[in-house]
Amino acid sequence: MKIKAAVVEKMGANFTIKDNIDLHEVGPTDLQIHMVASGICHSDEAIRKGDADLGYPVILGHEGAGIVEKVGEQVSNFQVGDHVILSFYADGICDKCLRGIPTQCRHYGDYNLSGVRADGEDHFQENGQHISDMFNQSSFTTTTVVDQRNAVKIDPDIDLRKVGPLGCGYVTGSGTVFNTLQPKPGDTIAVFGTGAVGLAAMMAGRISGCTRVIAVDIVPERLQLAKELGATHTINSKEADAVAQIKELTNGYGVDWTVDTTGVKTVITNAVQALAQGGTCAAIAVTPQLIQISTWNDLCVDDKKIIGVNMGDSIPQVDIPRLIEFYKLGMFDFDKTEKFYDFEDINQANADSVSGETIKPVLIIDKDYKPNK
Image 1 (cartoon, rainbow, N blue to C red):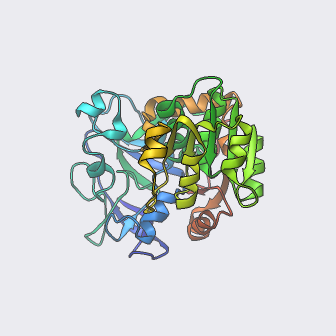
Image 2: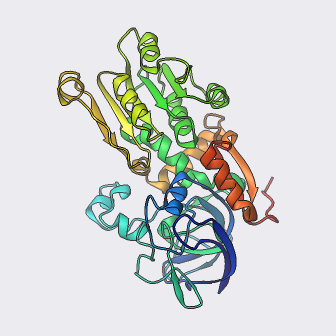
Image 3: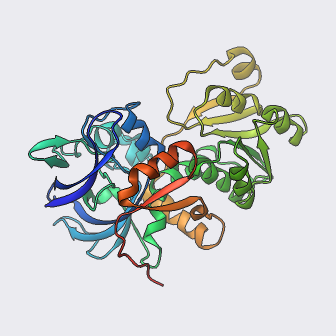
């Protein structure tokens, strides 16, 4: 079938919306999804500008939300009309998946970042020519086809325009805290960078019972929002020494946990320096930056740890419904970070994301969609 999609023709090019894209047919375990909305993530921008290369032309987007309009013959857990959030694909059969760590699926890269479907076929074509996909999803489309393992069913009373980013940015930030760091009540945490991922990590720290939840950024408006979302303290690192301030707030020790979402070399270093003895820094930004760490002072004597985390070590079918429950309870107000844009304004939305003007742009693909009341 022919669909409309936002295509990046070559490295660094703007998005071009085309209405002549051929979509792969529905396979035995596939779902055809009518797209309602999609978040824009910094990973989309990294691929668009060439920091990562899936092959061009490419259709990006991996924070989609929509409605099932067709199911494959082997699909049993979904039916036409279901409301879903889309996330990454893992096969569910490798040893990592069977141990409950789908973010470490042995074929994660092949399935999500190879530019083709898990079966090796083209997800999209234009005039018979290959177009790369992303995350076996490519949600910058009016319709897409995904494997059932990409999808998370949600209650139809949830506004689909809001929840797409739960499939990546919000589950990455919160999952890093809930699943990987696992702070105990009374622990302390500092989050460097208050974009969508950072604010999600910060809210997860608050939910986990941390007594010091410190947000660090250089944008006053973002720090104010962090305060509204539960930060106990905020630090403008453009105006103050963040490491010194954090130690002052923790009796000179530093925090138990830090999360860096910036990918900025000096900020990552500060996130390590702000740790207490025995503390752990999770570095989760997509960045080519290299940092220098003292194996003697930082890693050995101070027993600090630096870890990477992919997608918050999440199981989307478990973690996304949990975030929605926290949202319903008023404990995870992720939608305060969002701003809606028409699909046709994708280049402006992406520019606003890159500049920091908007924390989480959300493209409204189906303007006729009305949330259930």
